[in-house]
Image (cartoon, rainbow, N blue to C red; front, side):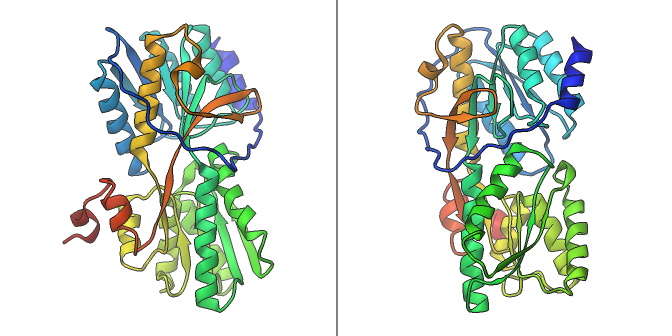
Length: 355
């Protein structure tokens, strides 16, 4: 079994999906879990700050309903994730909640779980080409759209028109989430012929250091004349800003930089006019919905999934139309920090403003 799964991990392809027009959903009711319910929660990484919140919120929500949670993360290593899935299944989890490292090959992990009679809840990143039972995610396409729309407004205000050179800084090559984020950006900028997309680069393991290298090379190539960088996450944006800082360009009146995940260090940079925009992909509704759904499935393993998850939409992942719950995203600028991440309880004023 293991060699065939590894072969699948290495060879499966990717089918890109569009996420335009997805619906948001309200939180379901909390119910008391049955005794001895065990949920496996497996994240692809703990590299970004936000994942500490994913872990703590999901675990607390599931445990508040009487469930046990087995947690692990994979360090962006797909083979390590395979081993972790096998370990969780051997430990007897009732439901597996999975954020895939490699969205193109993670269908093999779902098959492995199904062989043991375990249903799989996809988390945050839609896996491709596999029989996923249900998906809980943010509207990644809308994230890219918000980033690009903010950049369009910035270009208009700064350059006197929607024109300029921009670079798109993507995450992991072939990752479905990176594809959706980037698609939202590209859809917006396609309407503005004055925008020149000078680079559209992917970065293995969502590496901040690689994003810094990319930015350094682009600044040399274009003699520091690039107006905007849109990054798929906060870590990539931080790498971009490190390179800009070396050239004394890390300020919102010189270069527009957008990230996504609302890492604390990035929100602090937004507050101090170094970075223009972050997108807050609210973690609490994402983690809570996933935990509630996992507990409901564990309680009622023979019930129809759509009867257990509440409001949802259907997304084609290349294998089937997957019942999908969508949670909201919000733009965070210097002017909206207080009304978003602080009022929403994600950070305190003291954490951001360090006062």
